[in-house]
Image (cartoon, rainbow, N blue to C red; front, side, top):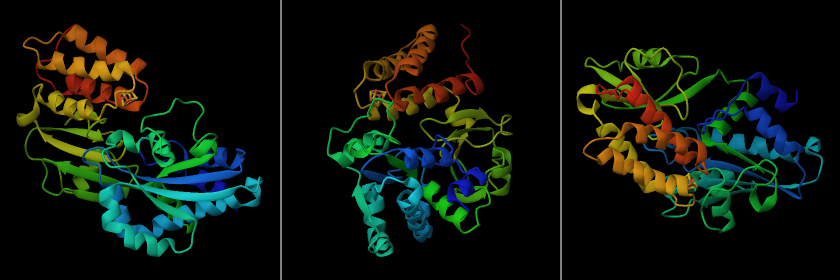
Length: 338
Ligand code: SF4
């Protein structure tokens, strides 16, 4: 059976955060023309609290390399039809490189896979899909304008398939008919049994917390998806699936009910805004001012969020909108009426 069909039948979606259908991306790169085609396994994992890729490389490095090899074979096959040279990169953060390079190099052997270390100091944005293309090409590390998308115009202008570590892991499971629609969840924060768990992707947040024995016995709320970009939900809203990168962080309501939560959130965005575009560079700065002012101007607060959502050049600037709005709506006791 055509492997693309197998991925389609498995309903595989990317696990980097966006949840884009894997088959659509693979097909687009296969159909694109270019003298070279590239595959990038994104192992930069930079969002606070998200550690599942680290776990997968530690426990299942062979599966990861198998998944990348399957992608190489797929893009080298006759159906990819243009005799392209195919090469893969594992784009990895420095810490994971130090911990796993020996193991990875052994598994890679003579496969056309190169390990590329995410440049030091490139921060969260250094792991963003289009910034990492610049990093590998040796250019200034900042997001690229899209379209064109990497599937047709990626590394050095060639069609490029970019998937996350967990996605390649899942691809290898599909190839051996062992994929069961499970995903990795990272549970952290104010809980006893924190860690990385592999459970059904169909479980709700409530079910995951129950199965991992992590339902708190104190008033709490959660942030789901990622500690920077994830949605904030109160304890009565847990009958939803986990989005984004699979993170569930539990917060003790007594500690975080006030605006402190957004102040902490902002620290990440102030630090990681790359400065390329005005809405994010200035907007995040002004947002920080509003939050720290004696009397918060809520109208300005929501206007600014809307602006960040609509005009930020890349996903980082707009990522603050979901956690900030959902925290105010679902948790904040001093909810503003505007
Ligand atoms: S949204 Fe922020 S991180 Fe993205 S390009 Fe603009 S300044 Fe850089």
